Every structure is written in structure tokens, then in C-alpha cells.
Image: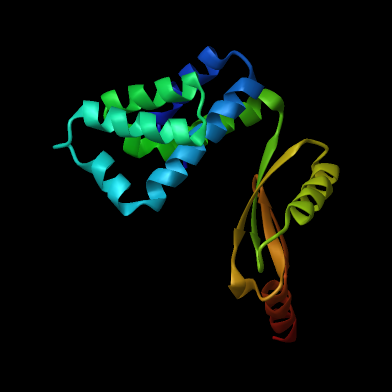
Length: 177
């Protein structure tokens, strides 16, 4: 669920980026920064601590964005979020931006839970299969869920496709009762 405050930030990024492709690049850079921030407990604490001044947070952010190779627009977005005390909400903003990019490009989002890590080739094959089914470009987001035993579960919009071993076992169990 995208929080309401995230949409104006996402809309501003779309407006400044001018094209969905450019906005997609910013989305990827912001997502990389958010992953780095979330992966480090110390970094998360720095950004969450209101006692640490904005200039210190900006210095840290500039250092990280240089290492990540982030562009000028992404760096400016992060600066605005820090100054407005919204940096800890970056995940919601990135998701709102991703949704606006999908709407602008006519792309659907597919959330896939797979029993094992999917290789890039497997992800591409899955995306092609879903694109044929829906007749639109599909953006696949994959997470690993070993409880599925094998296969995957794909959710596209309100439709769910269960091709997992655990799903087949459950359907078989239900057919016996």
C-alpha cells in the first residue's frame, strides 16, 4: 500500500525527470540507496536520529551516492527528503514512483514468490510468459520462499497463479475431502 504523502514526491520526480525512462533510472538509484541504508543498522540509526544535524546526514548521503554512482537528480531528491525529514520514508516514495512509471508505460507489476532463487534467464522467461498471458509488459519482482517446496506463486493485479508444489499438495488434499 502506497502511503498518501509519497505520491506528491513521486509526481515531482516524474515531472523533473520528464520521461518514464529517466524516472526509472532515478527509481533504480533511489532503490539502491534505500537498500544500502536498510542493510546497515548504523546508517539506519543515523537517519532515524533527529539529534544528528542535517549537514552531517547530507555529507554521509553525498558520500554514499558517489559510491553508488547516483546521478544529480537522485542526489537532489535525497537532499530534499533529508531536509523535509522524509528520508526514512524513501521506500514508500520509491514504490509510488515505480507505480507512476508503470502507469506511464502501460506496464503491470508481478510479485513472484519462488521456492528457490531464480536466475536472470528464469526471471526473463517468466516475464515473457506473463507478458504473453496479459498482452502487456510485465515488471517482475521476485522473492524467495522455501516453504513453497518447488515452483512459484505469481500475483499480477488481483490475479494469483499458484504453480507451487505446496499449492498442488493443498489442492490435492482438498479434492480428497
